[in-house]
Length: 101
Image (tube, rainbow, N blue to C red):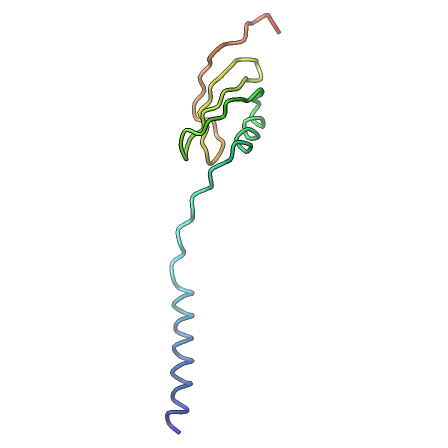
């Protein structure tokens, strides 16, 4: 009779203790943001005012190199964060001729 009463008591204590330990376990570190696809990068740049976006090249899991035009018509080469779509660097390749549209 002692074994019959004692076994359920031990099991319920073990199960409750496991649940408590799991609830108190530290959270897993957040996973890094996913790399944006070519279409997502293009859309992000369009929202920032760039147009005629072409030659989108993924340089690494952190960087895209993109050729595009600014709203002013300057041809630029952009270095874009592959996770956020933020333009990290802009190189003007050919300024728009002022006075011409």
